Amino acid sequence: MSRSERARLAGVVFVVLFTQLLVYPGVDELVAALGGDTTIDASTAFLAVQLVAFVLFSAVWGVLSDRAGRRIPFIVAGALGGAVAYLALLAVVVTGIGDFRTALALRFLEGSFTIGAFSLSITMLMDLDGGHGRNMGAAGIAIGAGAALGAPIGGQLYNFGPLGPIVVSAALLLVVAVVMATVPDRAPTARGGLDRVLDGVRATPELLVPYAFGFADRFTAGFFGLVGTFYFRQTFDLDPAATGLVLACFFAPFALLQYPLGVLSDRVGRVVPIVAGSVGYGAAIVGVGLAPTVELAAAGMVLVGVLGALVAPATMALVTDMAAAGERGAAMGGFNIFGSLGFLGGILGGGTIASAYGFFAAFAVAGALEMGIVLLALPVLLRVVPDPTATFGSPE
Image 1 (spheres, rainbow, N blue to C red):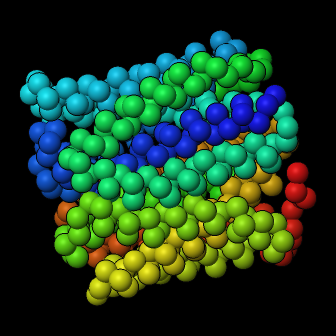
Image 2 (image 1 turned 135 degrees about the vertical axis):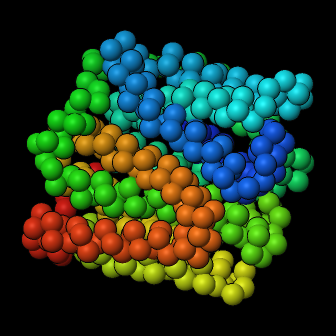
């Protein structure tokens, strides 16, 4: 197994995250070009349908791949299907055939395909030899880079027109399909599907604690992707390029600091980073909604990103601590399902609250959710981890 094989798989993970975030900084302009209006409700619908597809089809692709005993054909199909769906979105605008409802259907189709490429490329990294830590480290770097670079580069692409991010996304997914055809298929025998995730929760109900924190963390990521975009554009009169840079103030530290702060949780235990980080994280979100200038808002976004990076790897590591060695894959699958639901909730819930009650109400709810989960989960967390300073394992 060569390093290039790991790099190619990580590249797929990067591309899907990268293309997902490209559209966010100017999503209202894209939605208008596709026949929708410029309200937050239309943009909420456009972003949410992709995430609904992610939630519904993530486990489906995994089950199909496990039963077939192969990964590559499904990843190639996912990338090609996503590219075709993006090209069809372009056709809606160029030909004038169809309306915004057509665009929503195509967005759902795109999400149902690209989640297959994303989730199965991570699964292939798990299948590789060479050390689980190293392979998951490659996935983490890819996710971090995609999240950190997608919004600012997407903002720049909007300078070429509202369809710029769609064109680039289609091209990148076509490249993924070609690259994946060169990777050996190392799928093991079938390992089960969504039923193993449910069995794991029944056997270890305490897993719902890190799952709840994972939901809240991804909720805020989805919240900033949609509500943050509209808030910064309308409150501070920013264009998509500037909005992408402000969003990067959150996504960059949130993504890039997860590895070192994850190492910190190995040294000081899980409880302190989770509790202190979550309380600070929630308060910082509210602070961004109160910031009177874009400079202070951007500084607040950096703080939110740092504190989010303190919480996220500790909760993910807690999943590994709790799950039996042979059940960690299924347990992490459950964590990702809750995370996807959180991202969807951040877009749907945040968008709905902002539309009905204003931006600050949405910021307050997002911050309160993060802090509220600490209060509800802390007794269970202390029971599961009786020594808050306990350290776990050793580096692989």
